[in-house]
Length: 97
Image (cartoon, rainbow, N blue to C red; front, side, top):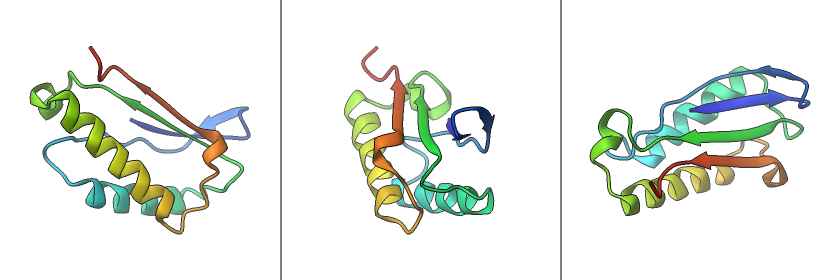
């Protein structure tokens, strides 16, 4: 899931279900970037991921598939024209379980 937090005080924004197997990191990044732009995301906003490996098609993904695809997804988002402040990038995951 993807959350946008504005100024750390008023939670709001969007969510996205990370798919390690059924969609490419590139395709997911395009969706996320476009959605956050529409929501008015700025470099003052925190960018947080919560990734679960026991949901949907992620249940059959290996740890390597999960971590590699998550890395590539985040890299595509950082490389996009979305104003991401990497000092406000947070990731919560259970990939190692």
